Image (spheres, rainbow, N blue to C red):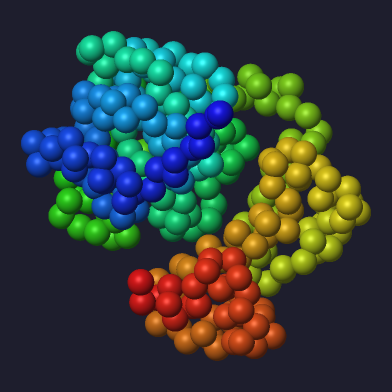
Length: 299
């Protein structure tokens, strides 16, 4: 019988690390929406010791400092080697297989919510869920830049909160660095990019820029000179997610930003997001998040 993936939330990750003596690991910072590891042999030992099949709920970005890790990511076998950059996106299924004794990894785990806050919903192309995971060798000079940034992020996050502007700016800087490292590799692939992928990229761009006022597929299809049916088919094929779900995600993220950072009432938020009334907005928000706007603001 195939083993069911375990959802590796921040809370579950904290439990695993705490059980492995987190207090003796000053190189690890953990919080609800952000974790940073500046160098650790601990993570691989914990994951392999538990024989976990993991479904990630967040973005993972890091660098292999030494050694090797054999791992299955989204059903494909990968070998992560020293000097290699790695990123994995939410929803990915990961199963560590084996690691060398000297395997050490540094990096960060960032919740989807914090990533969208850091970029105000305008994610770098590497992280807009078109690519599930990636691995890329980088130079020692490039690695040194990344390691220094991760160290600063860990120290700043430990003194501030994950949603403090200084922390968000550092998270954005690191993710932009990853995007820059992968850009030449991806540009070679983009020359062979299909028309469907170009349509999907354009759709995501429009959603990010118009979701506050435009909630219906028709607007986006009209802007792209496509029928709603054709747009829906292409988006689903390119991303595995329906076009309506992409629109809903953008609206909910924008609403969360307002609830967390603005002193706006539900009525005011409903108005700014072009909902008919506060009741309609509250029901919509709860259907997609499981919480009312007030419950989300209080949590």
